[in-house]
Image (cartoon, rainbow, N blue to C red; front, side, top):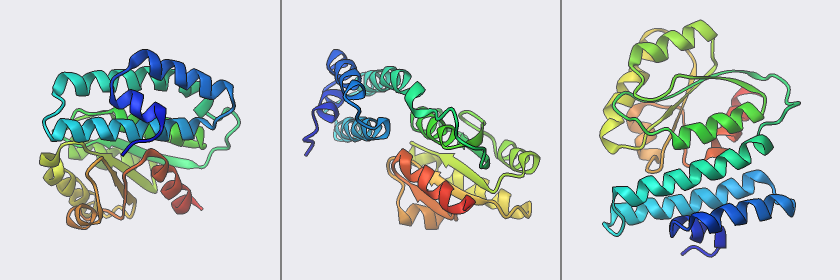
Length: 206
């Protein structure tokens, strides 16, 4: 049950309320990451409503648009201009999946934390992941997925990375990802919230 007014507003698709609350919270000194978390909780609720048939695709797309607009306001606050360079991370949404909202938030947070992020975009073929890891000598690769049907794609990509002899760590992320999925596809880590991605990256690069 949501209690945060911002989470409730985005889950109810109240665009103007969301925009107002984001600006209000920034002005009163609330940490940008805390605002992102509130927005993500509301988005997760919208996702639940979609899965249970309360919302349709139109509502889900609208929720994504509201989130996108809120992130545009938050971006300058999230990008740490003086963050030191920490290393390379390759990231992309796996083959067959074209969702990028969650991935884009993670990319923004990682950049703000001092990482050089090589963002391969969406619907990324296996070879593109392997080539980018080799080219940038990335110790970490992040794979995003929203569609349950793309698990095999993720599993095949990770198998190809291992077959190529790359010892990069693999972090998978998405709204339904858990320990069972992580184990099934052969990833090293999983994340369900954007800031988990930053925490795991910091762990690996330390």
